[in-house]
Length: 115
Length: 114
Image: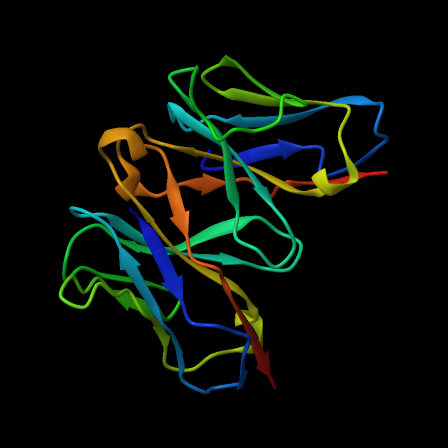
């Protein structure tokens, strides 16, 4: 089946620290991979995405590379800010078959950044 | 317009009430979704509409009734809910069959059942 595994949180960092949130997936074929961010009291925002192996998604200083050999899509940022405090969800989707339209989420990782 | 708009933002309802949640998008997306999110959990898929037809129902209780009047609107009718149905209800849309473009989510309706 299709599934996403995220590292357990919460993650607490000081401002300007380096961030890694691990994400691995299980899927047949070639899924599309996403990172979504949810700020307190809000809906989900697409942070970045990758649709094929070796693609690198990037946005707002965040990056993630689609690694098919390790089935991973780890989120990284070189220098976090207090405003990055949020819950981050890794997710995958498939474009074909009976799972069309379904988005598979990881459990989410709470990030708190202190000044 | 690159947004999904949900109304109301907050809703408190009694267990005997009937209410509706509304979702609207003008991006030309032909797939629309309802998700339920409990605190500190990922969203759970409830319903998927594809070209205004219900294509996925994740065994959701009948007290939740979705409706897609046209390609831009999605409603969720609520009746005789239970306190455990209190959650954040998220609407999303996407291009049909093009999941690689990502899904656009609304900001949600925070529902409290008393």
